[in-house]
Length: 279
Image (cartoon, rainbow, N blue to C red; front, side, top):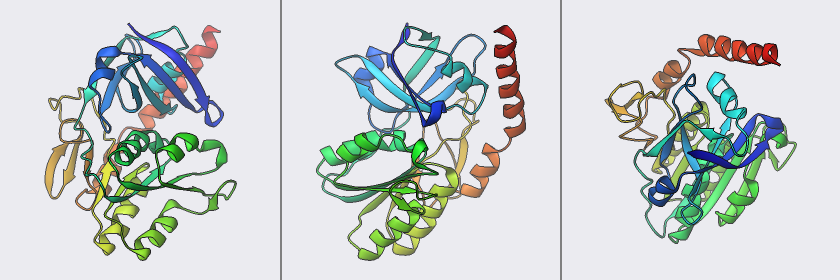
């Protein structure tokens, strides 16, 4: 049983943290890897990168934004409830080179994915400058954890309600112009990762991004998570989820992610209506 042992709501209840009992997964998981979860028999299989693992407690933690039917079903699970299925760890773990000067850039719920990577790099002796951002202060997550995982932390909000007003790319540009950056890690909304990669290419700084393509089985069988990297087809589930940002075809990825937007919206609305009707 993949029982929820801790649950927190953030960003006005639109972002949920679930700590899940999964001892065998927790024992093997590494930074950058992900899970596929299913709430119940009527739910979809949803890939989520682990924000935290605790081998001693035997738990893994995921953080997600409620955007569709399946994440709405996740939201309804409370402490003591269980996911029907949790599969993992999946994907390739993050390649960490000790002693590097790294800038980690995170946006929105991408900060949850970034956290274990930044922490792992700092533990490996890297100098980790983290830049995290959100639309406003209420949507900012994991500030305290990112501060502990970083040598230096910068916070941005689009509206200026907290930290520096503006985009994470503005702070990143300042760091790149100052020089001495060995690597950039960018995780968050696809447009953000695209513009970070375009910027770092100009400075010749290697850049790693974590992609979130549409995924079904998570083992490379279905081909649903295919992305174009360096002109070649790669699968996000087995070749990724991390890729060279300078080689990713972000425009194609954006189109694929938008393919089922209307169906997802209708399904989510119907799910909420059914809950209201049942109440």
